[in-house]
Amino acid sequence: MTSYKGYIMTIGLEVHVELKTDSKIFCSCSTDFGASANTQTCPICLGMPGTLPVMNIKVVEYAIMAGLATDCKISLNSKMDRKNYFYPDLPKAYQISQYDMPLCINGYLDIVTAEGEKRINITRIHLEEDAGKLIHDDEKGTMIDCNRCGVPLIEIVTEPDFESTEQVGIFLNKLRTILLNLGISDCRMNEGSFRADVNLSVRKETDKLLGTRTEMKNLNSFAFIQKAIEYEFVRQVDSLLADKKIVQETRRYDEKNKKTYSMREKEDADDYRYFPDPDLVPINLTDEYVQSIKRILPILAKDKKPQIMKKYGLSSFDSEMLVSDMKISVLYETAASLTSAYKTLANLMIPLSEKALEIKAERWAVIADMTDKDQINTTTAKKLIDMLLKEDFDPKQQVKIKNMFQINDIQKLKEYVTKAISLNAKSVESFKSGNIQAMGPIVGYVMKITKGCANPSKVNEIVLDMLKDMDI
Ligand code: ADP
Ligand code: MG
Ligand code: ZN
Image 1: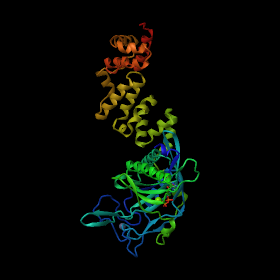
Image 2 (image 1 turned 120 degrees about the vertical axis):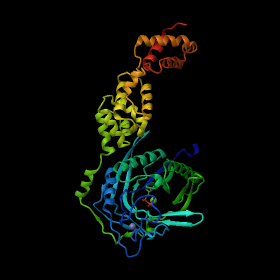
Image 3 (image 1 turned 90 degrees about the horizontal axis):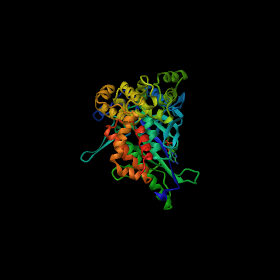
C-alpha cells in the first residue's frame, strides 16, 4: 500500500431505510416482506393512470422520529416531488420523492473510533417510495414483483465526512441501532430494508478540493461495503497514478469477483426533470405536532450516554459501548442498581456486547461485586460468565460449592510461590540473567496449581520480591 500513501479517501453515504408501517406510503396495501409476487398491489402502487396517492401520516411521523434522533431540523413546510426516470421496476416511470424541500435537514451523528470522537453531518432525510423488484430466471426470463412498489423509505444523506472504512462501519452500525431503538424499521440488510449507497473520491493529501466521486449502489451487507470501499479506493488511486481521469459514474460492486464495474455515467439532478407532484398536497406541519412526536420518542443513546457517564463515573468510551444497544444500557443500569462495582461491571459486560443480554442483571451484579471485593479474580469472573451463557445458576453458591474463592492470604501465596520457584529452575536462572519475562512461567505455575484462584497481582509481587532476594 506504500504507493497509496499521500492519498486520502472521502466518503459520503446515502442510506435507504424501509419504514415499518403497516401500509404503503400512498395506498392501503400491506408492506409485509415475503408474500407471493404481486399479491400486495393495487391500482395506486401499480401506477395506473387516473389514480390518486394519499400520504400515509405514519410515514411522516416515523421520518420525523428519525430526524429528531439525529438532531435534524424538522421542516414545517415540505413537499413531494416527481423524479422522472424509466426503469423496468418502476411502473409509473417516475418515483415520488422529495427534492428541494426535504422533511429533515442539517443533523449529525457523533461516532467514537479508535482515534476519538468524530462528527458525521447529515445533510438531509427525505421521504420517498420504494420501487419494485426484478427477478431474473434462466428459463422464464425476467419477471417483476410490484409488492415493494410504494413501500415507504427514508433516505438519509450524509456530508462527505468519512475518511475510512472503519468510520463508515461504526456510523452505519450506530445509525441502525438508533432506528431499531425507535422501532421505525426492521433494518434487515439481507431483506433490503437497510441499504447504503457509497460515494467515494480520492485526492492527494495536499489538495484542498475533493476529487471526482463514483457511487456504488445498494450495498446490502457490512462486509460488502468494506470490500467495495477498499477496492474502489485502490482503483481510483491507480487511475490517478496512471494519469487517468476519474469519471463521475455509478458502479456496481460484484461480490463474486470482488471488483466494481461501471454501470452508467452519473445523471445530474437536471436529468430527472424534478417537479412538485401535483397529486399530493404539500406537507405543512405545526410546531405542536413535531413536539408531540418528540414527547413519544424512547430515550435516545445520545441522551443516555452523558447520564451514564455522570451517574456511574464511567469514561466516554465505556458509556458509548453501553448505549450502543439501548437494551444493554437497561441491563447495565438494572445490574448497577444492585451493586456499586460500576467500573468492574462495565469491564465485564462490554466485551460481550449483545450476548450480555443472555445473562440476568442480578447475576451480573453478584459477579461484579465479588470481583470488586477481591472474593474472586477476573479469570474466575470470566469463567462464571461463560458458564452462565450456557445455563443460569447462582454464581455465589457455585463459588462456594466449587471453592473458587480468590486466595489473598500472603502466607499461603508465599508457600505456592516457593514451590513454583523450586520447580522452575530454568526460569529463575533466566530471570537472574536479566530476562524479566522469565517470571511469567513461575506466575503461571502458581495460577495452575491454585486452579486459577490465586490473586494474580499479589502473586506477581511476591514472585518479583522473592526472585530479587535470591542469591545465585
Ligand atoms: P445524488 O442524488 O446525485 O447521488 P446526493 O446529493 O443525493 O446526490 O448525494 C450525494 C452524496 O455524495 C452525498 O452523500 C455526499 O456526501 C457525497 N459526495 C458528494 N461529493 C463527494 C465527493 N467529492 N467525494 C465523496 N463523496 C461525495
Ligand atoms: Mg446518489
Ligand atoms: Zn397499493
